[in-house]
Length: 154
Image (cartoon, rainbow, N blue to C red; front, side):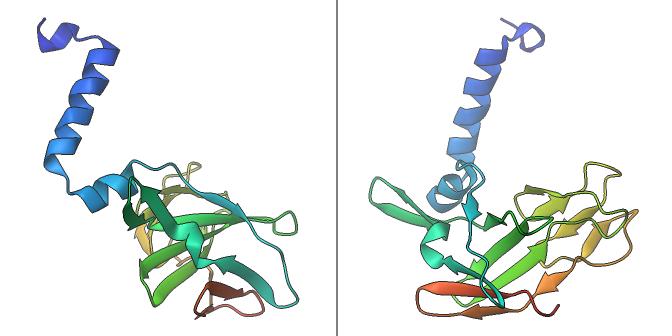
């Protein structure tokens, strides 16, 4: 079968085999997981999230998600928490700074489906029309939890 007549199933199998050959185990584990949505209880000053939410356990290997998304009924938009390492996290409000649409997470970027703006994992604009960074919140790292302070913007 030539590549112009390849069936969808054959294409997916072929593409997945290529990904497995090209990538390392840690990145494969992290990239093959679905987006993790977490409900968090809104406290007086913010949200607390268990660090375990970032862990991926597969057959004895431990890897970490690069981000999780926090949802709470009291919040108009979700918050995306990016994990850079054990002591560095970023909490970003998932509202586009251009016209307020809810953003979508895709790896290390947040994308606006309305007009195409993109933001990196630190909330900085990488593609317009947005010209302002995303709202971010201070993060306090504790031994087992992460606290997102919603009282102020960082």
